[in-house]
Length: 137
Image (tube, rainbow, N blue to C red; front, side, top):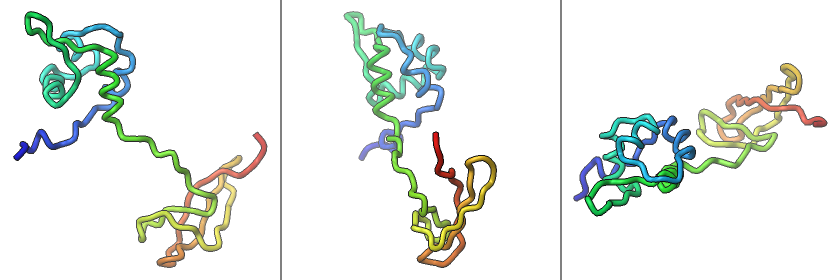
């Protein structure tokens, strides 16, 4: 049976996600890479045990290629959501899902910003969301 720590997903701190693409196409020692991405050596060594790309030289020293590590970090990231809500859709907090609003009403806030208020077709609760007025530009 795999250990609890081995089956858990690796949590990447935000600063690692931001700094990894800037790594140079060269080999780093573990301590050098840990300083570059701003994490403790022990954390990086744990990631190496869980599958981060490494290479060993003839003296069994561990080296990590910067671009390979950046690709590994990118592969672990959650995919970005590309979908946007339609003009008459909103998230109902009671139903816990996106629904098409009944009788949506737009109220101007400031500039192109609007407040859209409607009702949930499932539970009847008032739901609301922000949006932008359609216009030129």
